[in-house]
Image 1 (cartoon, rainbow, N blue to C red):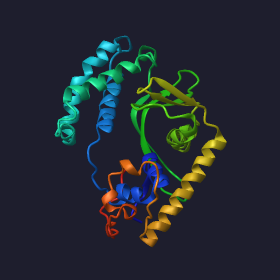
Image 2: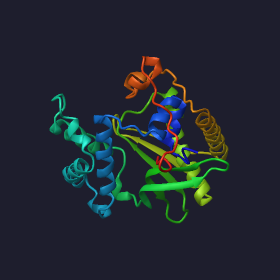
Image 3: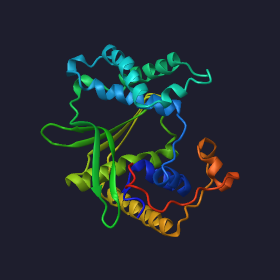
Length: 271
């Protein structure tokens, strides 16, 4: 089998377009740098580092003081950052300034001095019965003292979706809630999405039936992936996000020619 793990991002890719899933999860094609994605990585790094500080020190000023170092670390780690500024349409100052605005937005939605997260950027893994190893990274895991109630928190640097798209957005957090349930034997009391782009918070309380439904949905997705691997065919599906896809030149729906299907990848695919 070409793949052995499934993350929420790759599951979402498959539901959107099987060929997109294949190029990202099996072929692992490199994609151009995205200013939005890179900015999100920078803001996540700042918010993670914020909670390294003592509770009383988690001020907006302290968070802003972390931005420059996090930006330099990101540049050193990923050479694609500098590519964002190659054509002159975006400057480093504008990029960093937008990130600073998002960091400021965080403080309008939560008071970090009152929080004591159990974990940040937590890798969670659990096998799905008859399926893959489910895995992914949780931005923040809060565990209430005394009761032990679990809250899963995810930061989004974009804007909250319209209500008709929220169920799709919550799929990612239900995925994480399912993994926590399988790994710890405890259901999360709440999942929380913090949208910094328009300063909104979306919360939900996943029920056991919802988690079971998520598990069944992932089993179905995985069985489809297995069948497509065996057939060596991941068909493209046209949708509203095709205009932003990096792989149009390798998509038959846009006149491109798909890559030959790989035979023996070196290792299991990461999320």
